[in-house]
Length: 575
Image (cartoon, rainbow, N blue to C red; front, side, top):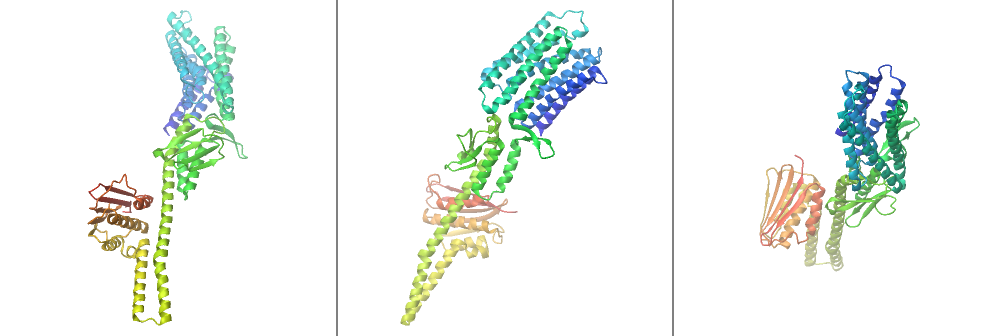
């Protein structure tokens, strides 16, 4: 928003200076020549505003705006000096200085920094510094000359005249060097950029020739031809930039006709903020991990207007949007080593530094999307493993017991089974029922659904062979939470106490449940042998950690050999 306001203010200052200066210089009615000057000069601030607003991180638009402001304020000062003389005669000095700066920026820096507002390479930096020095010397000499049009009988100061001549001559020389370099860049450019550079070469050539002709004609007293040269010099470069936008998608800004109403619209690449906003909505609506990564790749491709874009995961998985052909033109890693974003070549033009910044901004939601995909994949795998475990337990345990029970009943019916056989079958049926209840408790304990989390944990710990203390915070016993929250916390505690018995050989376990600061906490501590968390795989707890992550919570395990283990888990809960 701040860049839009700044660009609008600068464009308004330039436009107001151009219009007001032209009107003040001649008074009303404004002659046709002044209207022509206004029409030729106004595209300058308009183009600068367009590029600065749509590409605020690209300096070229701001360069055009700065040049336009110098033109507008120079025109205003010159108009006041001529139209309101002699009262405003002093304004000729700042007007001449602003025109000198405008000429230098227009002839040297607009061609040199085309199209991104940066020198083509480090080798051009001395040329830029020389051009800036020439502009400063030219403007300084004009300042020392003073308002000479009203002192024609007084000779100009020698130092001022020398500075003016030297600054202007060096500026012409630097402009010629920049033009030659621009021609070289045009000849070496690819097919997509060649059209842009061709128009800039034409505009820079016309601009340099026009200002040289302007100086020659004014010295020779040919005012009419001088004015014509001024018009060409002012309008040539804005015209080149406008054509590069309209026909060759300069900085990905395009102009076209939309619909049958023949409306002139700007079909422009979205800004970083716009891409992130639309991407956030797209990711929120993506239920499947693969679809989520696909939408991310599509967003990158659309934002950069490339032939293809891809999201590559650290495990080698790739999701591609578009028709992948050839190597990646740009690859940006996602933080945390989770993967990287890859982009193919652009349909028109090459990828720029701003494109890299945009992809780097998209790497943040990309990291979140990849984390979500990996978490979802682990949860799916864990659910499948749990399903196989239950299936195996039923097949190897309860199913075999039921088969044996049925066989026993058939034997009792065939032999008229006595009391001892019936007693054995009854005991076998009770054991099968107990095993079924134990299996069901492993899926979802009945105490959890009926009595809540505290009661289910107490029932689980009551069956442990070592002393186990369960404590609950105030109000916890009567509190109920969503099923997924209670289930995740119950199985986390259950896995922690099971590990304490099987691996740590604990002789005492303490379990605490509490609700604090909008979080449900569960802590399990034992006095077992402990372990090194960094060197020990935690298969069961890793699955539960993913389950808690999916609920927005976290699982932390601290342990040290010989000093026991402490497991702390929490999930967010309402109020």
